[in-house]
Length: 301
Image (tube, rainbow, N blue to C red; front, side, top):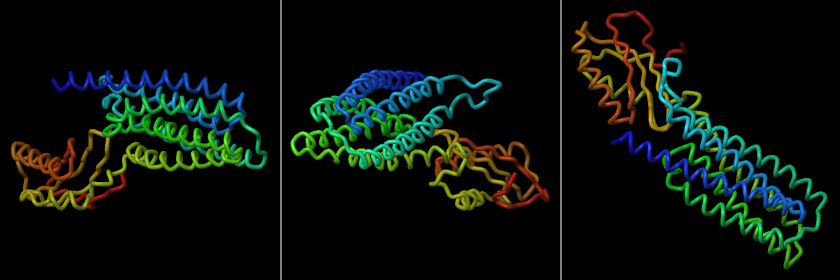
C-alpha cells in the first residue's frame, strides 16, 4: 500500500509541474513580446525570470521521474539524489538570474527610457494570475520536498515580481515615474538572491555529505555509549542521502568478544535509539574488540 501511495504522489506532483510548465511558457512568450514593444526592463526581467522558471520546472519534473527509477548493480543508491541536484541547480540559476537583472537595472538607471505602461500593466496582471495558480498547485508538496520547494520558490518570487511590475506600471501610467522600472528590477533581483541562498546552501550541504544541522555527533555517541556492552564509538560518519534518509556509519568497540547473536541484539538497540532520538533511519556498524586503531570520533579517511 505504501508503494502505491508513493506512486500516486509522484504522478500528482508530475501533473502539477506539467501544468505550471505550460503556463510559464505562455507567460514568457507574452512578456518578451510585451517587454520589447513597451520598452519595459522590469517586464523583460520578469520574462527572463519566467524563462528560468520554465527551465527549473522542467528540471524538477525530470527529477521526479528519475527518482522513481530502481537501484541497480551500477547504481546501488538508485537516483535518490536527483531531486536534491534539481534543487541545487534551480537555486543557483535563481541567483544568477538575479545578478543579471540587477546589472541591467543599473544600466537603465544611467539611461532611462519612456515605457508603454498599459502593456506593462496588462501583462504583469496576467503573470500574477498564472503564477498564482501555479503556486497553489505546488504549495502542498513544497512543504516536505526540497525539489518541489525550489520550483515553488521560483514561481512564488515570480508572482511577487509581477505584483511589483504591476505597481510600477500603474505609477508610470498615472505619475510618469519611469525610474520606478529599474528600481523595481533591482528590488526583485535582491529578493531572488535572498530566497535562493538558503535553498542553495541546504542542497549543497546534502550533496557534500555534511552532517544534518539538527544532529550533534557528540550527542549521538553519548547516547549510544549508554548501552552496557559498548566500550566506545569512533570513526563516525553521518550524512543525508536525500530528504527522507539519514545514514549513520560507525565503528563500535565492545567490552568483550560477543557472539554474532549478541551483536544482532545490540545492533537492533542501536537502530532503535538512533531512529527514536535522532531520526536516523539507516545504520551501518562495524563491530570491533581489542583493536588498537584510532578511537577518535571523527577520522579523516
